[in-house]
Image (cartoon, rainbow, N blue to C red; front, side, top):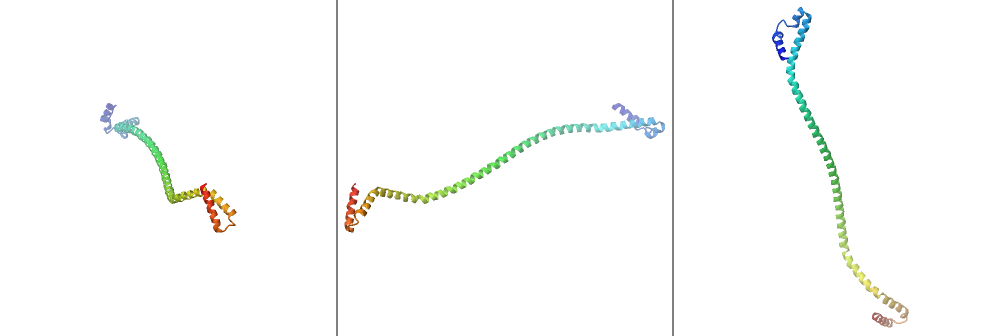
Length: 180
C-alpha cells in the first residue's frame, strides 16, 4: 500500500544506518530483511513508472488489434478486387483477340469484295456479248431445220446441175421453206 511505502521511505530508506553493509555487522537476518525492504521500495518506484506504460501498452495493443482487423479486412477486399481485376484483364485480352480476329476477317472480306467487284465489272461486257450470242443462236436454231433440209437437198439433187441452175433451184427451195 502507498501509506506503508511512504512511511518506509521517510523513516528507513534515507537513514544512513539502514544499509545492508551496516546492518550486517549487527545481524545477518536483519541484513536480508534490509535488502528485502530496499528491493520492495525499488520495485514500488519502478512499478509506479512502469504501470502507466503497461496501461498505454495494453491500450496500444488493443488499438493494434483493431487496426490489424481493419488491415485484414482491407487485405481481403484488396484480394477480391485483385481477383476481379485479373478476371477483367483476362476478359479484356480475350475481347481484344476477338476484335483483332474480326478486324482481320473484315479486311479479308473487303479484299474479296474488291476482287468480286473487279470481276463483275470485267464480266459486264461479257453479259452483253453472251446475250447477243444467245439471241443469234436462238435464230439459227429456229433456222436449223430449214438449213439442214436445204443443205441435204443441194448435196443430193443439185450436184449434176450447173452453178447457175443450182443457185436458182436453191433460191426457190429457200423461198418455199420461208413460207412454211
